Length: 251
Image 1: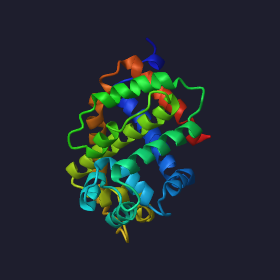
Image 2: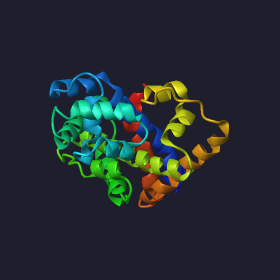
Image 3: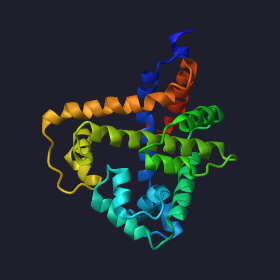
Image 4: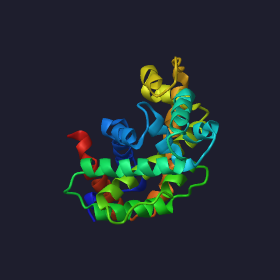
């Protein structure tokens, strides 16, 4: 078997983590996604994003939502969650958000990729995950995924896998002795941390950077059991499929 037909666990994780994360970011920040929320009755702002993405947690107090998601600033989450609450129940908002995920996927996933094969491999990873201490991932895994919409379903599975890595990373960050705010500043810088809801974030001491690198390594380790359920050939196929599905990001 050639190197192109086989891939080790951590090589596969490294190959797919960034495309999955960035494709999800593109969906979340797209005006087309915000327009879905506006049509559903949400006001401009973060209401649809917070109520929709975190609605899988149910009618939780805002402090619980903040603890589950971690990386966004508390005021951003509180404002968005409270603004969205009068519009519709949390479960209904999550269903609207899932629909927006699938719609965006149908508009942006390239048509020359074997989405059926991707869905099979991605679902194997999702089903294999241990959701203990990962409530946001658990909520999205439980969200129904239609069987008659393979392209939209592929995007929803990308979103679910993104939530898995994000939840693992939050746990790894705290285990490494960093706050979520510190991790955001180290990873993205002060200005971007401010964009994600951390007001006046102070620069982080450079001596903390090794902790963030350790958190990245721990995140990979927390995801490794999922990818161990695939054969080396399937990992290579999955990495290739992720690259194909997210190609729009690089065009």
